Length: 356
Image 1 (cartoon, one colour):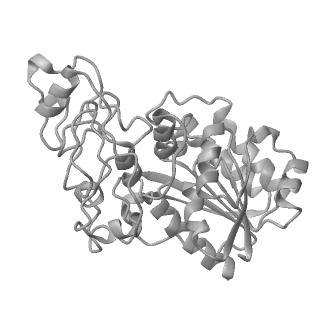
Image 2 (image 1 turned 90 degrees about the horizontal axis):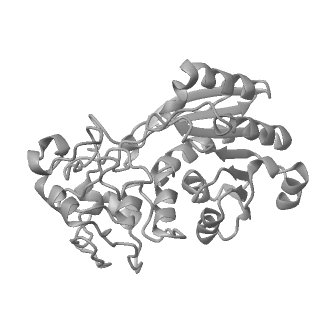
């Protein structure tokens, strides 16, 4: 049993908790997730964690005490849903934008030694920067000393540029130090799309093939592939003839502006109907990573929409990690997650600070 008891809020499928669950010093006792199917996905991967499937506003002191068997909590993890803050979305100061107050309420009830709060980079500019200042004021008022930094998952071996604000609070002195990048200039090269998904079978529109080339080896694949693990979820979405023509006409890294006039879509942003680069990391994936008209997500080698397995790989989820629900729900589970490799880097540093 670990010596530090953890609660995970807004857990999703458990991307942020992943790194903590891999360290024997941490014991994740309970997690809270509002969406039923996503809570089931979490439990499939973390069967020993007590899942409380409800709106966080309904998470009372009594419910928490019962779920935690009155145990002392040392650490809280979580990031409220980011749609309100995302620079891709409509950016409204709505009820969801104020969910951090529910996070604060739980902090007040459980009084952990430390917490990790994560969110999209857009939270920094929300409401002209005032929102993040308010969040910090609210958390400081509970006696936490805070540190915050923007980290890009690509710097920690994830084959995707994905920026996340990581806010860490400690009661009293905050000895937390952010993890140093392992990849980038002067370090190991960034993990490319080819290195992350190049072992997966070539697929055409609508095809499924769960075989992979085991002779294809690198450090990233050592992390995601497990001995004897069978591959799942490698199916190409089915698209219409016109979209197939568009995808096949694009070269590596090209976008709709590079298309011949007669098939060029009339609407969409510059990075819609765009191919990823085979020899570079992916751009940030969202829940729409199988929808070429929504963002840059066309497979550069196979000229098709991405499979669920490929989305999971770009987030650095191990092939054994399970997703649950419809294909759309599975893509939501993947697209909203903190990449496991980033969580591993954060967990190691939180442990060092707690040990101090």
